Image 1 (cartoon, rainbow, N blue to C red):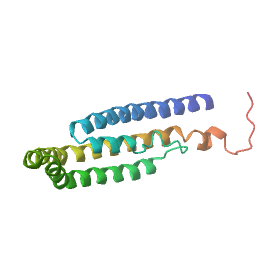
Image 2: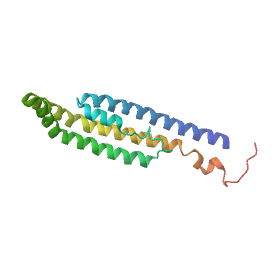
Image 3: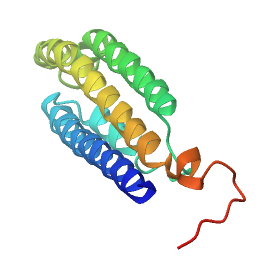
Image 4: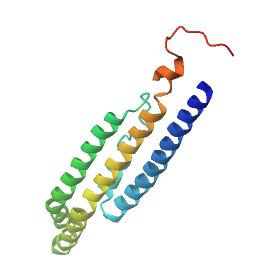
Length: 156
């Protein structure tokens, strides 16, 4: 009975972890493609250089870590979108005058729509990575897995 319970728990953990991992990969790909759509090369390069929870390599990522990182990325996306409405026309005007200003207005408005969506998608990615880490990282913490007492020896 104990083996069936452990096997069922393992199946559930890995099923939830696998679904969360797949969802995080989908939202991460969506974010990368949307970053190209912003037509803002600096923003896309800055996003690529940023650390993700997946590549942080600092041990097990928890759900709380995912939510914290996700909120930061959501706020960053909204901030980048709003400030881009002002920065993009100024940058365009400096480079190409009135024509650059007009293009900058278009890029700024596009970024106002797309960058917050990227922030939301990045937030979902980090939360899903946190879910996966919490679910799959809880293997050794279960009292039923170790028995009632940590030093209990089970017969084979």
